Length: 158
Length: 158
DNA sequence: ACACCTTCGTTCGAATTTGAACAACAGGAG
DNA sequence: CTCCTGTTGTTCAAATTCGAACGAAGGTGT
View (cartoon, rainbow over the protein chains, first blue to last red):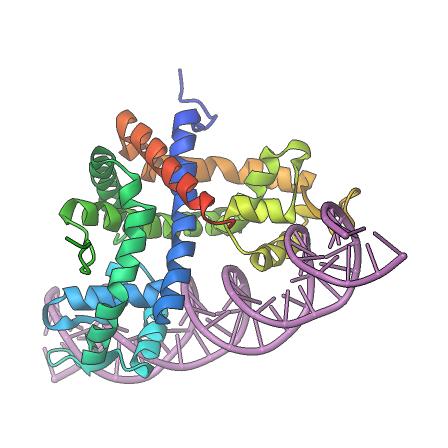
């Protein structure tokens, strides 16, 4: 018996997981966006840039590497780094070993902005996601979505 | 002892869950977007509009109600429905009981487009998310994210 | 009937995002 | 060295998104 031409639709449980994921993701992004904008004048994307930079050695990352971590397009990152540069939160530095390379580096002002914005952001993430879930749910979510991310990272490069 | 002024940062497990959620969400959206665009010429958002309409009684929904389900802005929906109308996939119908009201209704062509686009989309959702997780992980994810969504829906209206 | 507050969908301008095209360079194979 | 292929970051036009402001109605209390 040959494989069915009919696709394997999602059963109710699978559908619930999928819809829950999409809906929670959208709602969460919406809320975090508003909160950050009102509280610190940053978009979520800009905030994430600061976070990734502050977590990197030397508070700086190559543009491409940063774009990968953020899961965004190179051109999108170029735009946002320019914005952050105008705000004085990030600076561009050319790479010594590669003339084409550009480092985005967190400025003192950027570090300060992050220190100011982080508490409110983390509190909201906690209130809306972390504290809504049990310890076990959190663990399963971390492990499951970690696997999903890994799966997605794989067939991206080829 | 008064509550600490210092915010409760995320511990490693919590951080892993949060980063996993954000990353998986971004990667997944990126992939689905590409697949739908190449395969059917639809954006994910447009596809979701068709899905929600096809699931609604009479294949139609009020604009506001649809915007709620999609978790998007009213103006964003106005734009997308206009696009879909130009493609002949959706039609606007005025509401009999409320002059201000507008129904978005799935056309025959829209139904056909959905029938054509759905298999590839579902297959990818399955490949990248559903089939990567175990049955238990799926259940936990559905329940947990369901709760998160509910939590988010609550303090939205007031 | 009247004023008052809310809801509905659209319009508008500004901000953001994307993919494709591009120029400049890196890194090897020959 | 020289050609070839892959990278790097930017630019560009087009598409999308959002929030605020808006005009038009609904609904309520008096």
